[in-house]
Image (cartoon, rainbow, N blue to C red):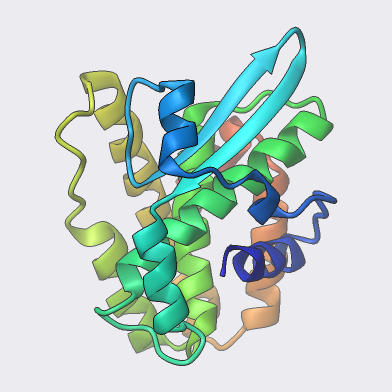
Length: 210
C-alpha cells in the first residue's frame, strides 16, 4: 500500500526519489530503539549524521493491515479512510523530505505538514470521482473539525492548526476553480507548481487564492 501511494504521489508531482518507501519502514521495536520524544501512529524520523541524512518511517502496522484487507482503490469509507490518511501522510513526508534534501532546499515542519494535508485531500479526491459534492464532503471530513493529539505542546498544536487552516483554504479554492468546472488536468498543473514553491510561496499562493 505504501509503495502504491508513493507511485501515485511521485507521478502526480513528477518527482522521482529513486528509492522505495517500504525499504525505510521500521517496526515499533526499532522506533523504540531510536527513542523519539513522541510515538504517534505515523512518524517520519530524520537523523542528521555529520551532514548525511538518515530517514526511517513508522506507520501503525494495524493501519497497514486494515488497508490490505480493505483496499481504498476499491472503496473508500469509514472502515478505511483514517488508515488511508495515515499512509498518505507518512509517504508524503517521506517523498517531500527526500526531494528537498536532494535540491539542497531547507524545509520546515510546517511545510511538511501543509503539503501532507494537501496530499491527503488530492489523493482521496482522485481515488474516487473528482466532482464537487465529493470534494465538499471530503474537505469537511479532513479539515472541518480537526482533532489534535493531546500530548502536543503549544508550538506543535499551532503548527498543525496553521497547516489545517491553510490546506482548507487551498482545497476550497481548488474545488471552486477546478473541480466544479471539471478542469482536473489544469488542477494537476497547479498542484505541481504549488509543490515546487517554498513555504513563503505556498502561503502567498493560498492568500491570493482565498
